[in-house]
Length: 116
Image (cartoon, rainbow, N blue to C red; front, side):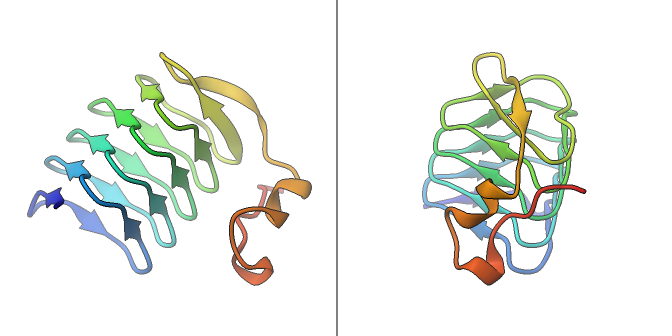
């Protein structure tokens, strides 16, 4: 069972896993995948083609850039730039996404693409 606030704006092809709560004025970009047990608080902007792993918490007012991956169990307290892998408590950038990363997770024509 999910809770998605009526003010939340989910663009096309957004996938939301079970037991996810999206509170208040949130915008989630096209093609983003949100795994199970994720909590997103108000004022958050998530870019296109992002992937949030299971159990992620996104604190109010945070922006996550396009094509970024947030590791499972992370607590995102600050903005995350586009095209990176970020994880931890608090969440921090681990490294940029690469062409090799595009091979994993989805069909080749749908893979998360690194920012050029």
